[in-house]
Image (cartoon, rainbow, N blue to C red; front, top):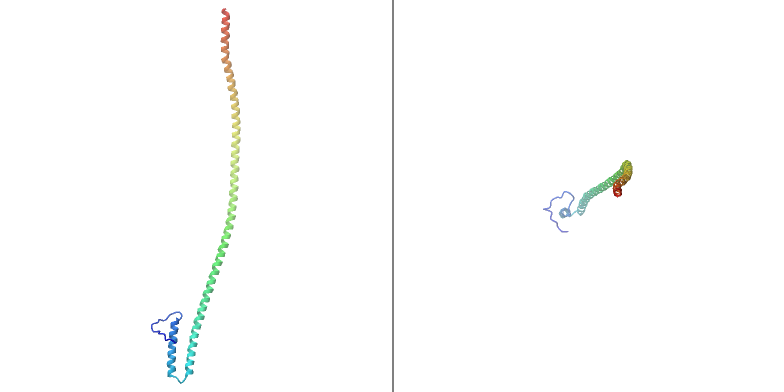
Length: 185
């Protein structure tokens, strides 16, 4: 077994490194050899001492690994709980958004119906006003048309009278001239 120097190594707070374990094992081996050399007469005592030390190391490392495993298991459980909490929170958020969307759809639908109803009321009001104005416009156009017809008749009558007035003086003057000429003769 190779000899490992451990003089300059520092203690590590969590877990033991391989070098530290090798260092301690080599010290124990050297101590065991020294006692074995000084106590050559009892090899069974050295073996039992080594077995005790090995059992102590196994007990320490066994408890260390069991606590490490329980810590890892606790971390796994905690991570699983966090994931479950996140998933539950997401499901609640999804349900909340679904309810909000449904509620919003209902409110928008109601508002749209009210707006549409109000719009039709305004259309009906405007249609009535427009209908009244169109009827008034039609009546005025009919009146204008009648007045135009009357005006044409008046203009035609005036024209006729004017023509009659204009033609008669010329006719009388011609007749007078004719009579005057006949009278001279």
